[in-house]
Each structure stands twice: as structure tokens, then as C-alpha cells.
Image 1 (cartoon, rainbow, N blue to C red):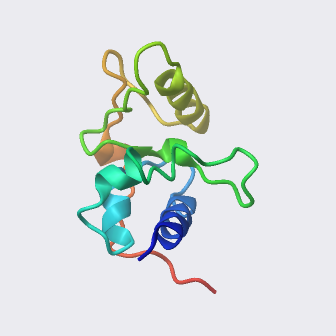
Image 2 (tube, rainbow, N blue to C red):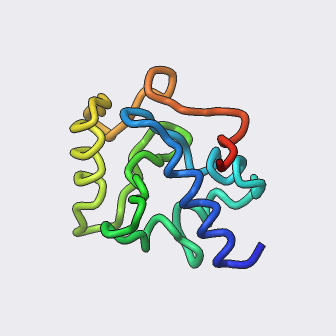
Length: 119
């Protein structure tokens, strides 16, 4: 799978996460058949979620993807990305705890065995 195919697969998988649900970077990687690529889904050179446009059509709900521990990942010192992610999740009804910006994956998690087939 080349970089463009990888990004397209990640975007399609993330678009299937229901409102008020979250999943992990690792689960997205598993769903697209690249189970060892969770870091590529979430960060690093091939970070599709980092580069999603708010104008994407259909939109990519990047904020519904969090770490496998349920934590909202920091976006680095001096950034407000984690807080923005929290605010959007809470606006959908997802509870985010203090401290640590964590989501209860047993309650809010979305972990299907496979993606829905495209029609």
C-alpha cells in the first residue's frame, strides 16, 4: 500500500466511527490491514489525521481517534490541540475525565472486527 492509499484507507475508516464514539490509532491500523502501523495513523511522517482539512468532503472526524489507553494525545508543548479535541468530543456527548484527558473506552469505544463495505 503506498502513502496515498494508506491515507485514503485511514480516512475511510475514521469516517465510519459513529458520533459520540471513539477508537484507537491501533484499531484503525488493524481495520485497514496494517496492524503494526498505529504510529503512522496517529503521528509521524505518514500522519493522515494531522493533515486532514476541515473542508474535507466528507469530513474526517479525526477527533474520534485517541490512544489505546483512552488518553487524548498531547499535540506538543504550547499547542491547544488536545483541548480542542476534548471540546469537540464533549460537544458530541463523550465524557472526558480530568486529569489526564481520558475517555472510558468500555463506555465510548468503537471496536468492530471489520469496516462496513462500501456500497
